[in-house]
Image 1 (cartoon, rainbow, N blue to C red):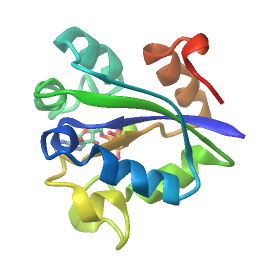
Image 2: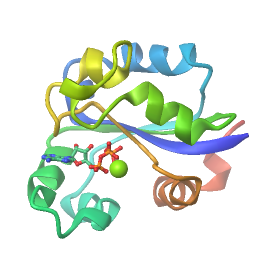
Image 3: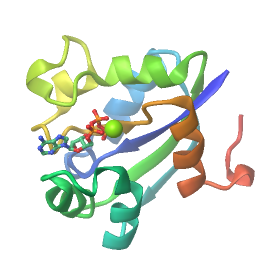
Length: 138
Ligand code: ATP
Ligand code: MG
């Protein structure tokens, strides 16, 4: 069993699609074992996406991530990091495969509905950014 960190981005909460995206996640046999809806501060967004701080889109990405509430989640399943990335689809929804969350829900490369950890190591770091072990219930 492996855990991954998922974020439903502000375009999802704004359009009331939390349940629709969660249905995709659960249909793909990933279990939501922790979940919280929060409003990120700019400082938190910058810290979470620090890996992208030198990219041209960093400022816009952080502003976007604080433009409304997000839902942070821990997903569990076999090979969940890779399986969730596959379910999410390509970063740019124009390139995302049919049936993926981004193909069906994303508004743009920036407002692309979901975040998922890109490695098991990063998942551990990202999960601990938002959750204490006592709040994760398998
Ligand atoms: P995430 O980390 O959110 O799961 P990802 O791993 O598919 O997405 P990254 O390369 O890590 O993509 O980029 C992080 C986020 O930054 C993207 O999800 C998207 O919201 C935004 N982003 C990436 N590239 C661009 C771009 N060229 N222009 C605007 N925003 C971008
Ligand atoms: Mg990424």
